[in-house]
Image (cartoon, rainbow, N blue to C red; front, side, top):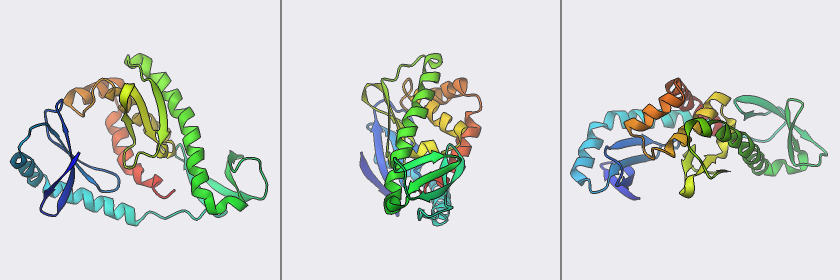
Length: 231
């Protein structure tokens, strides 16, 4: 990957021999990605970017507004934390065997570990994400006739999921904070990528066959995605 600049816009340029079209995406943090076929001329890339300038600036402003509104967690009593789209209040407790538990409709964090609250929440989300997302992969993979080699949950930066070497599926730990139907969309989206690596028309057609209401869930992901950024 290399950088490509057009005036004040800086893109991460991703070239692929299998891609036939140009595509611009704006990641959750506002980073711009320009995907293109290998060997494409710089002039064609620049013309495409200029054609999409209004759309790009609109999306960047939307992302900026959302990010300014994100409150950062303080890990204090009564604070809400998401899990599969539902908010659970935090209770600081004096003693418990595990650093963090979800019990009785509340997240319970040891008071002496509150300063390390983010670390313990990420660990909890990652562990439970592997179980939930792994179960969804196992549920949908057979009917979609794909065979992922494994499921891993980790920090993927501004991606919800990706397909790695050997058909291993990777998911961001924040996926488990999303509502169930939206998290399931992320799973099925990545399963389709096992057959279609890029967002070609064939990819979207296969996704629609697997998930007829994918467009609604995709829009919900865009709307809810920033809700999970404050952890």
